[in-house]
Image (cartoon, rainbow, N blue to C red):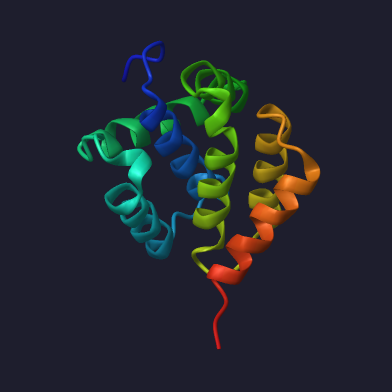
Length: 139
């Protein structure tokens, strides 16, 4: 199992993206493509070793097998991320959740719990959510 005590900020962001993807127990190809695209293109991941994606996925899968795994994940994320990246984490989660064109209740619940865990202001969260929706609209 990956070490749970030494996540980098980038690892924490990846873990959040993986977690929202698996939250509905059905990882979609579009969500995986979105995660890889974000990691490969966003400045926050400029120095990130993309080989860690699999390690972070394993960590999330292992945590989700535990009774309090979601709380443990949020604790690791809060520990690893500087406050200024909390909204980034929420925005990445929203983008991954929206990637398949639909949001299930369990994904919405995950986003709500993440918003509370990271203390994202409701107005800021609404703006982030609206931006994700706008980026993922189809004709």
